[in-house]
Image (cartoon, rainbow, N blue to C red):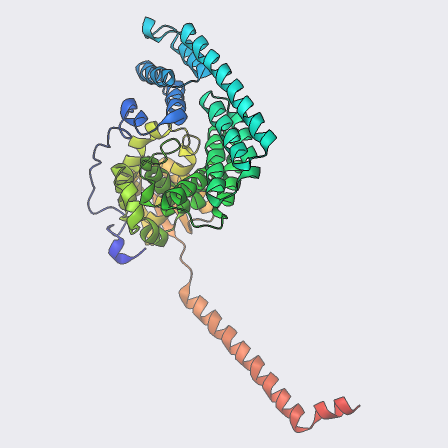
Length: 437
């Protein structure tokens, strides 16, 4: 830890304790602002995120609000299956305006059958005439049709079939983006990685918005597979051109949240400074989520109580995030452990009472955390349980220096003898005699 970045006292106490400000409405606080949150997204992901919140929030008023918004959003679409599902979950609790509208569902299904028949006839005509571009468009239209009606498996197959009829790099990129979109909805992140790779291998250079979309998609794939460092790198590489151009998958606020938390959990101190805090492009995303920005700065400045306070205030709502919920506990544990390691690193001894106060925990709980880190060899120290002091096990620098000097002397002695032997052999022409024999 650099001295200029270290605001702690001789036994690891912070010089100044920063108060934890109130987080922004959409992300922070004990209760999620569902309307503000849902407004960040469009399309199917908006509905699935609202349904996810309704299933996991554990608060009836919040659940009903999410279901009401999902119901209204579905009525703007053609997905009758989701309409039936949401109406069943509401179960009449929102009044007569939010019951199953069978007449609407039947009308949508009839129109869907007619449209499907028309698309099939058009595609058959294109295939008979062997017009590659028209066949590609036909399969693409089928993919759009199936996607809008919630038939994601059929949508995936239709989009993939367009691959054989793509004639330009732009067509290949569009096909990849369509497959990636459906794969994310299906949770098939192996396909996401594969098709991001295919899109990046197209010969023509891509526009900045497409590049940003691909970075985000690959970041989500790495996040899903718990490769947090790789996920952080991809989110950090995402350009500001993303803006609101990929809201059918991810909001710019999510890039700041996912990238910031993954970086905190996996980056060392130097990487955190160079790749996150000093990253001008990523700063644009962090400005949208000031809580994440502040906790990153607090962590780097060793204001651990404030940093952990931000994390605790955000936890409830992060657990309602459809991509992050399964990783919150792991990320929080890694961030906390990194904070403990960073806290103890500069000191020969640390008072556990003071340290427990800084980390808002009990001495007993802190001892268990320290024991685990010492066992995993992440902290070189021993605990004095009686006096509640952590003693660092610093290497004996004097002994290590003597050992290096002795080793250097032995190596020099060996090399000198080898040179003398070679000189004597050359002097008496032993090498020539050997070769003559």
